[in-house]
Structures are given as C-alpha cells and as structure tokens.
Image 1 (cartoon, rainbow, N blue to C red):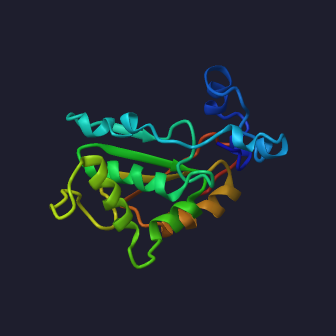
Image 2 (cartoon, rainbow, N blue to C red):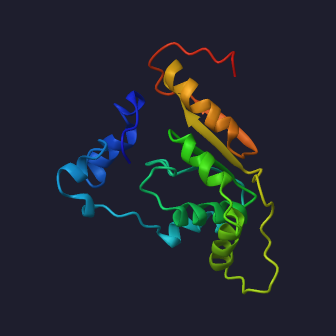
Length: 190
C-alpha cells in the first residue's frame, strides 16, 4: 500500500507489514525513489481468493484488510477477480473500504462495450470452473447486494473530497469509516 493522506500516518497494516511482512514502509513512491520498484509485485493467491466460495455459513469479510483494493498498483484484472468471488458468494457480506473512492467510482462505472460485468463474469466462470455456454449462477449485473463499499474520512477535508465519489459509485450499500478521526467532522451535508 502507499500513504495517501494524513489518516495513513499510523497505519495498522504498515505496522504489521514492518514486523511480519516485507518490512517496508508504505510511503508514497519510496520504492521508486530507492530504485526498488521491481521489488514488490501484486499477485493473487487463488487458494485464498476462492476460500469464501467454500464457506457455507454466512460471514462478514473485510476485503484487502492490509491494503487498498483500489490503489493505483492494483490492476483492474485483479479487482475483477475479487468481484467475481463476491458475485459467486452471495451468502457472505463483503466490506470493501478504500481511501481512493475516485478509482472505485471509475472502476465500477467503467463500460467499454464489453462492460465491467463481462470481465467479472469471465473471471467468475474460471474460478467456478463453469464452461462457456453453461448458465452461470452469478446474480446481478450492477450492484451486488452483498458488497458494502466504503471510504475512510479522517477530517472535513477528506470527507468533502471522498464522499461525493463514494455517493457516485454504483453500490448497493455505502459506508464511512472515520478512523482515525484527526479533526472535526460534520456529515449533516451528506
């Protein structure tokens, strides 16, 4: 991940990453400045990714709790696969929290003729091992009712910047996380 605002200063995920992960800070551009941009690559562990498909009892799942699914370093193809799993697991509730709701809005609103759901269905077919031509039991083309899209707001400035993007993003459920709260926050406007 990379810091995007003052709310990232004491990031819990960065602290855990220093102790148990790569040992690297999440400072913006630090890998590029240090000539180590190639040291970190984004990958999906398909076994971990598809775990919710094997859980029968409904669960609340915090998606990408150690990073931001909508960070610039995450390719659309990876996001498509995450959404494919969420579409295939309607028994679960998925919380997707981002400090980058403008990217979430752009991603979820994207339509190039094939449409965002075409890409998601393609990945869902692969993950569920459904052959082409067979009906796929993925519900909804549009908002997934089991996906909650949220953004972090740490003060009035970030609320005013991020909330309009969150509200404009296609989502069945939207939420805010005011953590860490670094200054006064008035949400009456929203």
